[in-house]
Structure formats: C-alpha cells, structure tokens
Length: 475
Figure (spheres, rainbow, N blue to C red):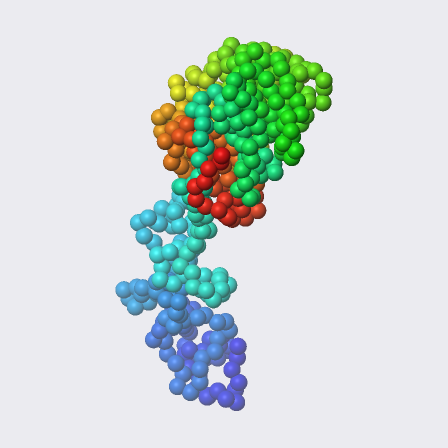
C-alpha cells in the first residue's frame, strides 16, 4: 500500500516497494527486495515500521519447537533456500523428522509403521494443541483395557458325603431340578437335597433286590423318573412323595433317562431306547433300535426335536421325534459315549465325549451332518454340560486325572481345571440358575463348584452355596 505523505519523510528508504515509474530512483531488483524481507538482517527504517502489500512471516521468529518441528538450517551464504525449506517443513509436519525408518515414506509411497497411529516417541504430542485434541495430555492412543479373565474358585464351596454312591461309568445317579432340589441315587435309595434349605429327604427305598441306576427330573421339577436295576422305570410325585406309576419294557437295567415335555426316553443295557408318554396308558409308545451295546447317554435337544444317544458300542446316534431308526450316525469315537450335551446357544450344535480309549471331545453340526472339531483331553470323558449363560462348557473326567475342566467355546481354551475328587468324576448336574455345578464320584462325595457367571452380572456369586459352606452328609 502507499504510505501517508503527511507522516512520511521526504527522503524515501530503499525498503519501500511499488514505487511510481515516474520517480527518478535507482532500480531495485525484485529478487533483492525479497531477499531483504526474508533476511533476518534486513534494513529497517529508523523512523517507521515497514509496510508491504502482503504479509510474509519471518521464519526466524517462528516457534518451530512448539510442534516438535526442526528449525530450518540456513544455507552457507547466510540465506535461506525458500522452496527447499518449505518442502522440508511440509514433509516434517506430515511425516515427522526424517529418519532411516521414514525415508521410504518421504521419498516414496511405501507404508510406515507410524501411519494411522499417534506417535509416542515425541516429548509432546500434537494432540495437545487445537484443533487436534483436548486439555488432557496424551502420549499416544491407549488401547482399550483388556478384560481380565473371570476368576473361578479352584475349590468346592460345599461338600456332601454320599455313602454308597456307585463307581460305575454307565450309570447316571445325580440330577438337579428346576425347583433347586438335587436328586441322588445311593444304593437302593433315592435322596432329595434342597439347595435352599439344605434339608435332606429320603424319597424311596427300592428294597434289597433292586438298586437305583438312573434319576431324571421332569422339566417342571415336580416329578422324578427312577431307572432300576430290574429294567423298570418309576415315576414319583416329589411334592407328595408318592409313586404314581411303574413302567415295564426293558429286560435289563436302565442307566439313562431323558425328558422331553411329557415324553420320557429310557436307555437300557438291553441295547434299546423306549419312548414313553406318561399321558398314555401304554408303558411305551415306540422302541428305538440301532445300538449294539448298552445305552449310557441320552439327551434331548432344547427344542425337543432331536434325541442324541450314546452307547458302549462307541456310537453316537441322533433320532428325530418320529423315527425308530437313527437319522444321523457318528462312529468316530473309539470308546463308550456317555458324555452328551446340546448347545443352548447354537441350533444343532452337539458335543460328545469318549471313554478311556478315546479321551476326545467332539463337536457336530446336526443340521448339516458335519464333524466340526475334536480335542484330546488326555483323560476319560465322563460328562459334558453347557452353560446357558455364556458360551462355555464343563467336562468331567476319570482315568487317569479325575479332573473337572471349564472350556471356552469355540476356542476350547481352558478357563479352569478343578481337582479334589480322588475317584472318577462320573456324575454331573447344573443348578437351575446356571451358575453352579455339582459333581459326584466313587469317593462317595458330592462337590459343589461356582464355575459360570450369572446371566445378568456374570460376576455375582451364585445364591446357591453362598449361604452355607462346609461338609455335611446327604443321608
């Protein structure tokens, strides 16, 4: 801009720009004027600051340290290389100081480990200054906190003495009802243990000629089925402690029971499975044949459409509601299949475990008839149960480690290994709230473990067992 004549000395300085062409003045080259502007030792008017038609900041007065940027170094002749300095500053602002690791980025297009992440090697981050961040000092992007694994107590919170609890792999002598009552077959008697009050009730005594081989609660928790050594199945009303029915049909002991609404399935050493509708007058409505040895595992799927059976013939079969022949046959196990569990989280997902010569847990998709995976547990698999609250399952084992393992599915990583039983852990049941399991063994003890989280908090201890600790007897 032109200066005010009233305030400008008549003698003009050489620093002024845009002189009228009519004025008889020495010609000053454009390059000379620019060099004087960017030079830190340019001439100043002794009487007035210099004004120009545009603002060109002096780089010598810039605070490059504020942004962790290196100040441009002057050339040997004392003057800056404007274009080179600007390019250097631009590269530094975009990519940080050029180092051997970053030279490929500055000079080319290869990716760098620092792209798309905040730097942590600088003393102060650009995030400290608007518009990049807030008032909180950040040295980098902190990863989201890793959720610590759930703590599972390695010891049972309660132990019950269970005299005469049989050490027989093919029997199923423990079951937990929807009303929080545990049924246990001890010798020729069945006892009920109320988990809320710890009261013990003797439900029945079969006499000296018979023994209890299996127990199974109906879904509502008011009726209990008892399989006997003589091949009969008894139905008891536990509220009145009355036997309401005895059903025949098997020639040998009944070691496996499974309920599906009003239908009761019973598996026997006579190699057959009988389907019984307790509303019908007949003892059974159909007979399922396919196994070549004793039936030791029976489980209905959660939608009551499929029944899985395991036998001492090392076979796992799947039946539908109306079939008398298995619709799926799995023959990969190398030992008896007692451990069977349907997933409550994925439709058609079935887990099975093999005995001493097999030791494997296998997973099947019954909707596509495919074998999903297999894991060797290095020990006889006696039972499997799936958590209804989280995608985890528990297996109990016999020869030779007698342990209880909590698994994370589908990775099958071990969350906990529980020990304490001195015999094979042959019996397993889960509490109605899905948090507690009870295990039974030939050491004549029942042990209660908190292994699964609650459906809401997934951390609160089970109400069952939190009220009483210690060791008592069930009879």
